[in-house]
Length: 129
Image (cartoon, rainbow, N blue to C red; front, side, top):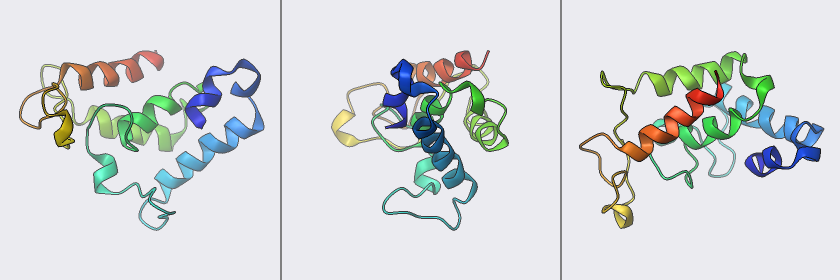
């Protein structure tokens, strides 16, 4: 929902979008105690993975990066730091979780860096420039 709102000009800066963004940031901040339904931001959430259809740190940070008002928020910056800390010396990202039905894709394994996962992370970083 938050991602969808970011694409609709009349909703992008709405109270609904702001509330949605803040809900995600609050879940991150209280991730050790808040576990609504299946939206827990635990260890699996923090694993690097693609594609962006999962509820994971790369997907959520990608959505949040579309909203300028979060770019200085310490909770968002903590998410970005967590992602950057996973980057290897060559600037690439290796999946830490993979859906076996996607094993033929570069992001469907956990052994070598994934160009697609790296691309998703670089898109986030580019938004922040």
